[in-house]
Length: 387
Image (cartoon, rainbow, N blue to C red; front, side, top):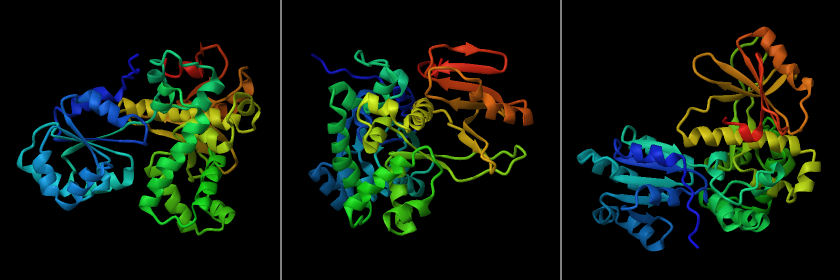
């Protein structure tokens, strides 16, 4: 039986970008499907990976020889592992700016982008491929869209297509990729402490990030915590949702909230490995919130749309889960609730803010079955998020 090949939404943009830019880059977490998508997008290109020892040795010791062999029509995987390649690429494409000449992929955002900003500005198109979004998940015949199952199973394509048990997949993901990549970037020292840090970060999901709390909990310096957080961000494990900045007559809190790109990994770190345990956990609401916000980030990135997403919280504790800017000064407020029953109390905070600024629209995403559109409110089941 042929293995299911999921068509990724980003492939359309990547193919189009290669008509105009000499270099196309796709970054994203390990196991998100970057290599598979790029081979699908550019079937006639050569493929080389900097994780192949022979390729890595050639690229690091003889970059000129590497580009003599791979001068165009090539996918270079994990390109950020050999930073000196970027200046050579700059020189090559400046001499001959052939569209789609090089296609790069990388799993460590800040290294790849730092070198790009130095060497390749104006010569490169940048995209990010995350784990599957809801539309892409719909291509999997076996996808069970029962909420708790969706959350625990996560969105990594290889895991889902191969049917790898969650505990096995995520344990290996942490050991094989995350811990190794972290060790490549910094001297962690005590990996046991780092593993504890990962679990603490999962516990802080959906809350405003306070470095000093993590520092005190782990008895490591604030600078170490900052470094580790940066690595998790650059490896596309977590992301920060900024606070809404427009003045609504309130003193706004500016510390961002922390979320995970994949709810399966989040649940694994929280020890919520079965549906009943998740459903009865006091973290269920936060994990649902994470599911919806991460889905919106992935959906927009895969279609090359600007996320423009925030949360709202003021010094009096008035909070709304999500603010989205759609177009010029069109702001949608959304509350995210894991319950199946609509309650008017879900709208209290949004109504208070709408009294201050009537242009704000009110939305609710929940686990109930009904989708309702009223004059001042739209209610959606989470499965209908993009409808």
